[in-house]
Amino acid sequence: MAKKALLLGGAGFIGLNIAKYLAENRDYTITLADNFSRGQMDEPLVALKNKYNINVIAGDFTDPKAFEQLENDYDYCYMLASVVGVNNTLEIPHEIIRINTALIYNTLEWLRRTQIKKVLFTSTSECYAGTIDAFGYQVPTPEEIPLCIQDIGHPRFTYAVTKMLGESGFLNYSRMLGFEATIVRFHNVYGPRMGFKHVIPHLAQRFLSGENPFQMYGHDQTRAFCYIDDAVEGTVLAMENSRSNGEIYHIGTMEEITIEDLIRQTGDFFDFQGEYLLAPTYPGSVARRCPDITKARTQLGFEPKIEWSEGLLKTITWYRDFFQSGQQSFETGFETPAHHVSKH
Image (cartoon, rainbow, N blue to C red):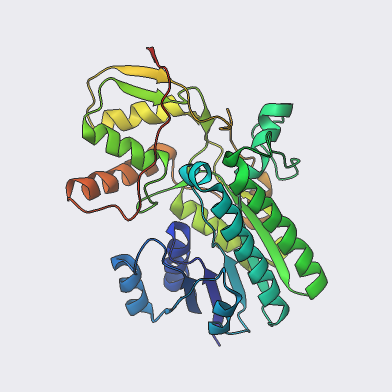
C-alpha cells in the first residue's frame, strides 16, 4: 500500500521540488497544502498535479480551521510553510512573527489530534548566524552549535527567532505526543524558480538591466550554495531514515565561496565588460557561512552532487530566459541597501 505524504507549504520553491522528487521516485500518495500567497497554481504545479494525481489543498493555515481539510493519518508530514526573505524581515517583521508562529503552533496542535507518524520541520542556518560573528564559532559549522542572534530587537532576526521556536516546538511536542520529528537546517538553497527575493535572481536582473559600474554588495562575505536537487535529496533522506528521529541535520554543501566569486561568475555569464565596485551589505548578515555536513553524510548517506558553478549556470540561465521573455515576476524583487561604495 502506498505511503501518504503531506507537504505543508508545498507550493513554494523547495516544497514543489520535494513533491516532484517524491512523485517521480517514490510510491506515495501526495497531498500538497498551501495558501498560494504568491498567486494561483502556476504551470509547473498544475502539470505536476495532473501528471501524478497530486491532491492540492488551498487554505490559510494561520487559521486552525484550515487543518480540517487535511486527513489525520499521513505517514510523513513535511512542514515547510513559512514567510521568508530578507526584505520581508525588514519591511514586515511583525507579520513574520505572527504568520510563522501561527503556522508552527497550529501545526503542533493539529498533530495532537492525529495519527501522523513522522514530521520533518525545515529550519535555517540563520538560527546560528549570531554565534559565528559574536563568538567565532567554527566554520564549517556542525549541528551542535549553540543558537544565537546578536540583537533581539533587530527586525532582520525575526525569521531566525521563529525557526528557533519551530525547532524546539517540534522536537518537544514529538517527545510528549508520540510522533517522530526531524529537523533540517537549509544552507543557501538555490535553483530555477526560487523566487525573486534572493541574491542570484537579483544578480541576473541587475546584469540584464545594464548596471555599470556594478556594485558588489557584501563582496567579502562567504557562503556555501546548495543546488535544489541536492537539498531535496538530503531532505527526503532525513525524512525516510529512522535513524534521523529526534535529530537535527545541516543540509548544504561544503564549497565555501565569496559573494565576489558569485558575482563575477554571474557577470561572466552575461558577458559583463564594465567596472565592479565594492559595497557592504545588510546589517546582521553573517560574514561567513558554511555547514559541516559530516553528520548527514555518515548517518543518511547524503552526498551533494552539483558543484556550485554548475548549479549557478542552470539557475541564471532560467532567470535570463524568464526576464527576457517579458513574464512578470510573482513577487517583488530583492532590494539592495543604499551604501557608500568603493572602487575595485
